[in-house]
Length: 371
Image 1: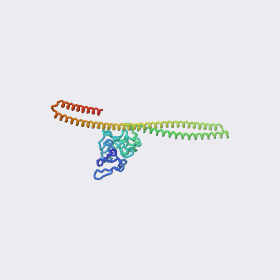
Image 2 (image 1 turned 90 degrees about the vertical axis):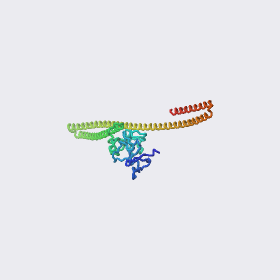
Image 3 (image 1 turned 135 degrees about the vertical axis):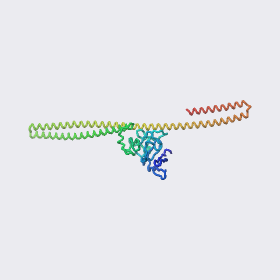
Image 4 (image 1 turned 180 degrees about the horizontal axis):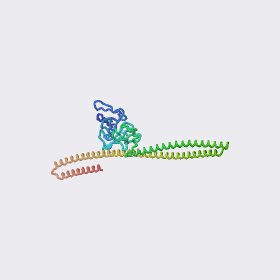
């Protein structure tokens, strides 16, 4: 089947040849010596797949003048969009140049449609776009680092972009930053609360010790009023310190609650952004399904039209043959009965009726075909 055959392009020899999709070893037999392009296609690469000409190109970035800005095979160059799969070594590139039909495409925000052309799998996470200096165009990938330029995609993804994917990634980054900030505030508040609890416990122990000391001294010695006043003041100071520590603890708990609320709000915004991304993917899949159904309906209509045209041609040939035979009979009768005008008139009438019937049948078939 044609679906089991893929087209391969060798950059070294600029040669094109077909290969079964199930074959893992790709060998180019052009030139004086054969050479192996891959021992485990499509995992071993790198490979570049053009969505317009549906060709797998054995990529060689060391050659001069080679980039994704223009397809090596079909020369498509309008608005290139690239996606590097995180499951295999295939990089899909899609162009806006006109083409008859695309089996795979790359969406504006970087996701493959319907899946990777090499391994037929979806990305493990949302692809991040960055400008690849090696390929001279924007490349989207779910990998941590670009397979061509080695740039850390996660750090580049925080930069805002004008498309919908950039807005979604910006919202996700902001939500994660707020969540981290809320967690940090909560941790600091918990540490402050634990410190305040320890200080309060020490103050309470100290106040209890002072009270016991004061009570003991009062019971034993009945010391002077000056010493009792000092003890009382120390006890009051300890109580005030404990009250201040309790107030600080309540303030820390309130800050921890605020941090928890901010973290929950950040998680909610992150969930909304992910839901929007899933809706966009579902809408893209629905559009693709509608396009496939429309192409199938057009194909069936073309087949029906071809069948109707074939039937019309057969009917036309049949009646043309019959008309020729009738005319021949009329000519023979006319030669045999030249003097019989009545027979000639009847023969002409029969021929005219047959001609009218043929025209009527042709018009009827044309109307039926048009409807």
